[in-house]
Image (cartoon, rainbow, N blue to C red; front, side):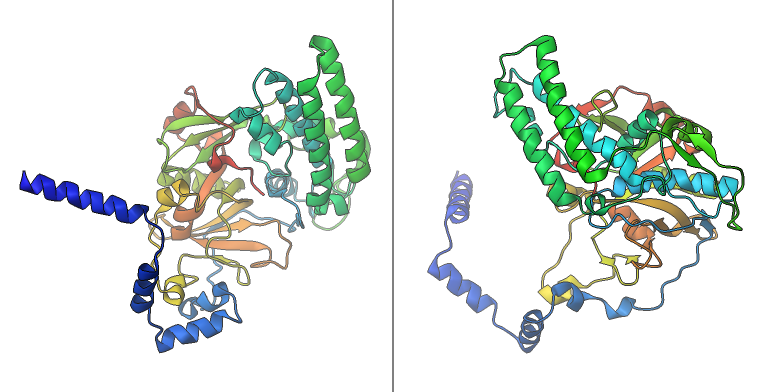
Length: 459
């Protein structure tokens, strides 16, 4: 009984202490426990004039980067998304163009990002307006309605969006519809489209119209959005003339007339929605299960984001098989974690923040996700792996879309340990997946809410 009384008293004291504010006595305790040493003063002086990342750069890890890769997919030309969040689009199109360049031995090829971005913004606008109609009977503080109005439009996305847009609208070469300032600097222009969409969304919710009349009102609103997009991005190409150039710079064939759909059919011809599977490594959720995110799609009549959650070793097996067969992959990760951008190296020992700040950082991947400290932030094109004598990966390489002057000639190199810690998604063709993985991908997915923080669109 005495022990129980002591335990209850101890718990009561702990609860009281945890609930109180910061007192003067507690502040005095902190001061006495944190007397400045000579090293502390030196660090404080340095932090007054320099950012912590520069100070934390580990000098023990400044040796020349090993850029040898045992297996690499050939690529030509680095793209640049500039000040936009379209990495998902650049990455998806880089995967597709790589196949054509290598197959047809072309000098180079880049698909028009602005062409598909126009339709991406139009389709997402329709998705929002139609979703507002679909949720018209719910109150404004409903979680889904709230999410819709917070996120009426974005320039981010995933490979699922690339697949739906390409299969619906086709492709055009970049020279036929080139980039412009608005596409390269999306933030300000998109903010006005979002403002208009929110205004239209409220009008739809307040409207007394029903059925076909309500849809006609939505179509009128969508026509105004189309007009805004034409002003900012230009009228999408309907027909064009094009001919490929070989590695010698000469035309391989005579120019032909194409529509965007016939161009895609001739150059690629794959069913992007059926031939690829998105794999995820998310240790906060059960492995070998499929998941689908509500309203996380680019077109209203398209596909929600769907993925199979797998252990990292299974994902690596598929990645290696794809690279060995000269097939690039859509890849996403938490790119800013431990990134040495000058050298283009992603490694866990790039920085020593613990020594600079005097604390330890010990969360694992699961804990970082649960505490909102880490999540996928950027998509790139996985193109190379360096395998040891036993076939185990030592490092990986991605083709980025931040321009040729960034990183290692436009690429980033990551250690296998960093890959484990901060890689999240990989889109792989079915032919490189085991029967066990393919069978698991067929199961009915668990539906996750659109506001789940793990599934914010990639930049």
